[in-house]
Image 1 (cartoon, rainbow, N blue to C red):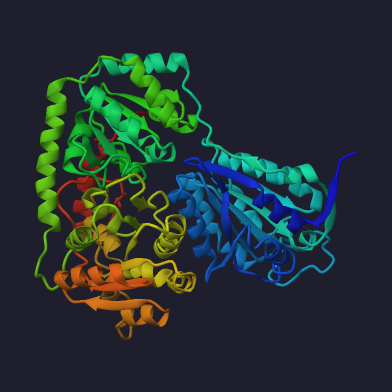
Image 2 (image 1 turned 90 degrees about the horizontal axis):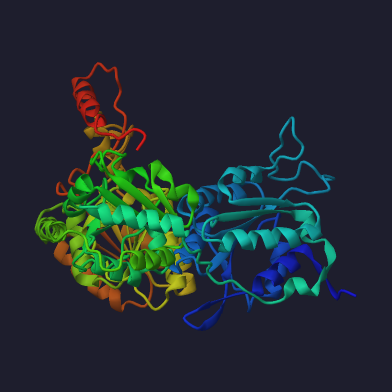
Length: 616
């Protein structure tokens, strides 16, 4: 006879999460590092009570914004290379849909997070309840249906026993290297409190270790043949290299074959910046060293990347008509993109078997030498861009240089949206895997501070430096207070260019007038004079405003010794970006306009669009 234990659905869920384990570096660890929770009437009585009962085994963290807490959970998983993860729970209505943006971010970036929004009453007796969204033609719809297209797996729990198959399926998705992404279990609030006799076996401890699919022999052979024929091969390292923890093997592979490596935003830090074969960033935000190789490459080995437009220069960067792409990716959808030769496998396993198939072969010596020469030239250009200056308003690059000189290469540098991703991708010198943490798949303003919180929770021994603009700061800054409350020290550098400087530059580059981006160009009665340092201090942080690059470096040195989150603010020039490196990006310019600037920009756009490889 099956042994059972009577629990509410919420209690069963919480207990189940405490029994999921993983192993990292020989140490047994809970798979779930905790649950972020903002309680409301849709989850406080059911799931709130259940989490209280397991609070020592499964810590519950309180945040100030539902989107932000889900960002923190996602950043935690990213910092752990998807080996550990977190859950996030909200009430119904606004609390739930506040997490939709974060769900989309996790979906795009292929990162695991378990979302547990409260839902309407399954019984429907008290309908419509507070915060319930009613559909006039479908009684099964709730606000949580917004999560369906941006969840890898979605379920609505309308009976307590449904949590058993739902959680089993959720775990398969969250831990699968190819399917990985957000899972949403919408928890009807009355069902959370309903009891069921659950089998004890459901709560048996289970280990989840990374699956490493090996490549098909035929695909490996085809990839090896293509590589052996190549005269100008190039490796593009994506985030899959880091998630597979394949960095050591990537270095060995590059050194054995002499093939230069470039990195996507997600893949940056796959190799140390000072590795002689690391050409740095590729694409729209790339280095000249990487992009000149990409333009000529006759074979592109794309490892763990989804080849989005910033990587490919909107498919105008890889100009060699005779090129072959080899897609080494655990997800077949990505491996076969743009008519690539697919090599469907875990990045570490795929590189290992490809290395064996290529034993004794090396890239032409003159190609490798050409790559190294380009890197030396880029280093000089980057050094000029990041050098200290006495300018009243320094550039983003000069601020990056100050942070790099003061903080070094081994901090975790975290950023997301605006102009900083373009500058940091090519200028930041990452030292070790995971030391560069970019959210540029969804380019989500507001991720930065919350993401820093999650990264620090995952890596408490590391100094976490968050860089963001004033626009992102104003969008979502509440988790500064949470970081102080939890004793999770962040060093936050706010670059105040008084508006949305990056998009303003893009607006002008496409012929537009400076309009509605910088504060001075928006509709206003009075321009705001925002004291970011005072605001950060009001949230409990140590803060100061630096008037120069020299003062910024001094403030950062002090921040290292501070005992809690420190915010340093510096005003920057909204118009200046690094000229060196980079590549065209397809942003469509209007075909018709009364303005000569737009007409000129359209003519230039038409010329550059002619470089795109349609169907490649």
